[in-house]
Length: 190
Image (cartoon, rainbow, N blue to C red; front, side, top):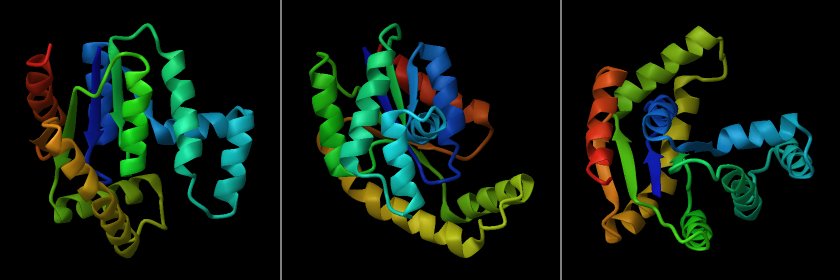
């Protein structure tokens, strides 16, 4: 099985690239954001728990996220593996994911980090906010999101570098050029 993690700050193109990678290599695209929205929309027991947490303005706990992830992985047995889009975000989640995959006799093959400088990310997010009418996505809010991302991700980068499973890809350029760089790296694993 091929199991990939795609990291990158908000606005780096993770979602776009994850979908392209999933299609190219027949991987299940696992996005915790999509999972949370789906569970809430479908009013599943876990979705109701998540909704209650979010309505209180709290973060969804690692344990609850891991439970949702386990369910999502169980549903995707016909694929060649997984691409985790922006997950894990903490060392606890990374270790939990490793354990979950080990139970299935598989492991993380590679972690790809889309590297985009701060100014470019801010420009992309402000542009996206304007297009989508997101008045709450101000430069201050975006700066805060970037700081949270970097604070959370730094320890994970070390976690995966120690395992020799971490690679950086330049996240600037056309989506096709970026995808070709990723595809070349991933194809070498197969």
